[in-house]
Length: 192
Image 1: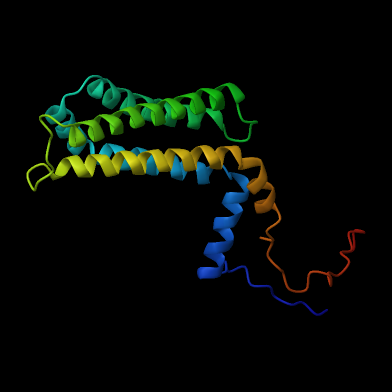
Image 2: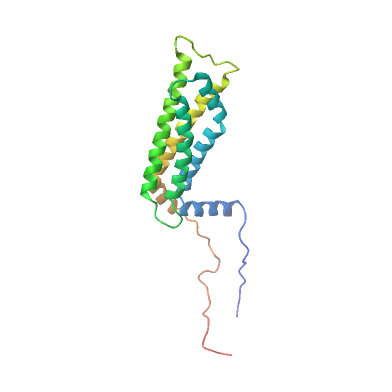
């Protein structure tokens, strides 16, 4: 009887890491959009000081409400995303719809906030100059633009989810096992 030992050692290295990464993406392709949404939330919330200082200095109508709505909708969109894709269940379309409405609302309040900054910096009388002391205005303006871009990317990723999930499923992540076709017949007749 020729018995060959097959190593039970797990394969290690970069190739195995990449294989496991694609296996997890095949199971949960919505995580790509989740990373984009999390990046949008982090960009906005980590620069909240510049945004708050800009609101305090410019103080045009609805800037505070836009800032508040942006943080509220960001958190609620994140919660809706997590509720929209439960583990091992079909996606909940109501939650996806709510999340998309909140993201469109986020883009709207960011656009209004951006317009208020442009208005304050370009108006004829009592124009606010961006100097080294007021550099946070330029930071807030850039953060709002990046936030809008990341939210738009998240919406596109959610809309394209059926397409790229099918493409991900086509990626071969199986492991080739040696001697797969040469298994011997096991006799269970009761010989002792």
